[in-house]
Image 1 (spheres, rainbow, N blue to C red):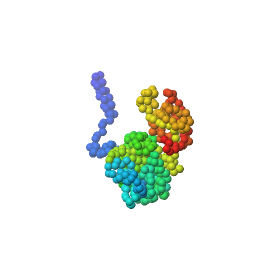
Image 2: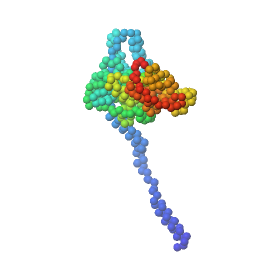
Image 3: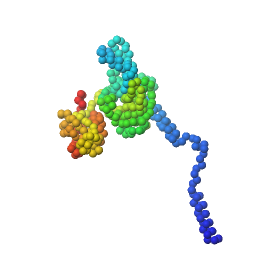
Image 4: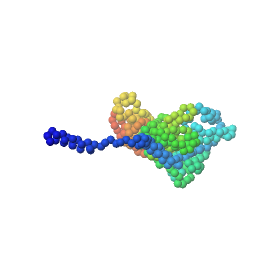
Length: 389
């Protein structure tokens, strides 16, 4: 065999060995290609997750019927009655579809309905203050149709949180989550009794967190969701994908007619838990007091004071009450608070809420800017007395 022939033969052998190790593309089975793809499988898994969560949670979501009797003895009361009977009234709270019946010429019977969630096996229920305020009788109905008469442990109209109690044992409960871990865009599941339709489930996402200046309550730090919330959902739970309560559904934005428009609000469960604990202990909500007027930092203030963008979430002190904890700690008008207990401030509403949720007489640490210099100070908070701001 010639030298050229031997060389050609070796090349052929080498090529044959090399290509024998290269895997061939899989043969597509047309029958397999017709089955649901991974996207559909994922959707089916998500639907099953919603089903499992809601089936487990619904037993601990209750329907609340509140009965009130009001004496109609003034022009103001009559005007209020006409207002609530006006079909063009914009409904903001769950009681927007309450039923008002004239039982006598000078008396008015009102029925308000809402929702709540059981948080202890012996019958403690978390709900909204506006659902149970001025109640003469509170009837709680469970998913198994058992009915109980409830009593009010305590309520806090300034945050719209209430704690009520029925006499029961081994009742189903829903685990409480951590609303500080919420992320915009994650799933949100609302359960309640809109328009008296018990155990209604709606699903959406977390649209925003930290909503304030809505005008619903004095202390606001709302979770915004597009999970449908309607009259009667008030007081019911907002759940995460793990079946934990992350908020208490409270209100929704709407135009005349009272319908859902995709903007609902829930009280963060971390705020509700603190308030519920104090209501359980004292029957009322006590709040700490700093004694300052607080203002968000605007771009104009940043420029005027020559501050960096890092101070944009800080809070400007614009007033200090005489004799207040702030005055005793030598805080000054013009100081810019950056952190409380080493946690950054996200605005005036955030700092105000965090101070209010602190127990009275608590000592806190504030980091702040004064004339461009960073300082730190400890302040012993007082107790907020109404009507002091």
